[in-house]
Length: 226
Image 1 (cartoon, one colour):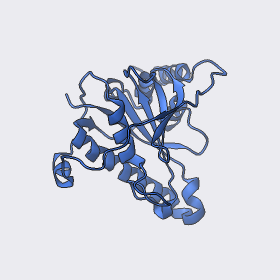
Image 2 (cartoon, rainbow, N blue to C red):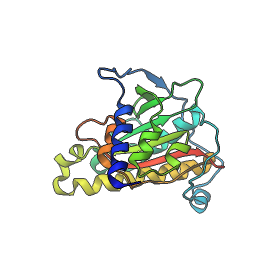
Image 3 (cartoon, rainbow, N blue to C red):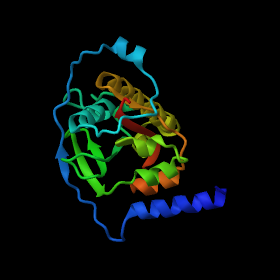
């Protein structure tokens, strides 16, 4: 496909993902099952088994599994400031987690944001936007094959007030911590993923309707290992 034509297709797909003008975000909050804090797989075993997985079984992920993976990414581990599953420079918490969820009977297909304090999902908007995200991610097939796609975004402004010129690198480091947590949690759940960093930032932001200051950093397709 010619580069100009490919870019035009991406723009059309992303525009379709945005929906009709004036379409409101629902704001519905869905409580997630309480996360498990013990498991049958040791940290050492998870590290040994960690791999990048690009093929997934054609079955949805259970809500409990989605919640556990979200908790691994940014969950609260203890009441009070600064206690999450991933370290954050100065407890500035610049990371946001969005999930494109598809195929669950109890949850409408759509884009959801994880709320760490409530261990809940907030529905942002409806629809299956994986195809548009796939085009924004340079047509990588695993984005549309996975029943759930996690997108890690960063808000550098939250860290800048304290760390100024070093803030951006700290946000990138934190995204790496989060992604590795998801990998290791996935091993214990039989869920595979692969980190994707090759994408058009502006197009991913359009698909997810990210606000000003929110920058996409990582895409992680999530699915049961085939």
